Length: 143
Image (cartoon, rainbow, N blue to C red; front, side, top):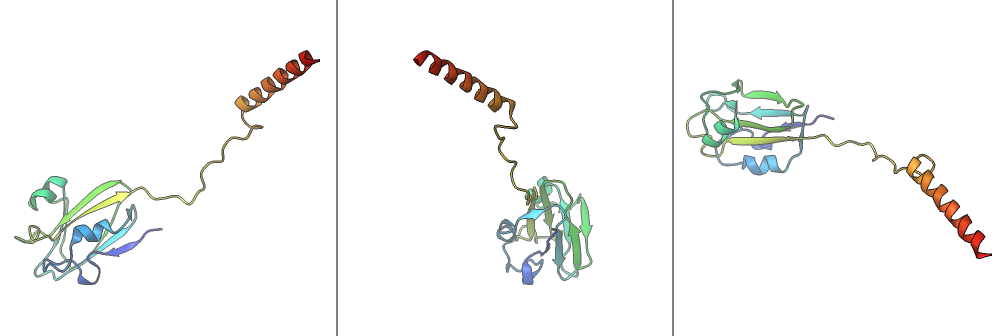
């Protein structure tokens, strides 16, 4: 089931130092289909999805996507891995307004496969037959 996350919780997407976005993201388990909501004042901020290199260097000149309305929703695709977002306003990314979202595989509610029973496995069936014959032979020679 998909989850909706408000980035930065009640503080939203800001450069005011109220949120450590790396700590915020590390405390969550993101999966494909989840939605990120970026709430911010669009006179002072934006959201740019960037590559790893753009994230590390705080370079927003070639974003993969740009969001500017102040209440942006981004649905994470089924692709596993990192999604990088930064604020493209000068100095904001360097001040910590950037986030690395790691999309992990969804966990399944299915129980693990049952171990093979002796009746359904040829190996165990043959082993049982072999031990039976061996036991019969040993008992026959004992008398």
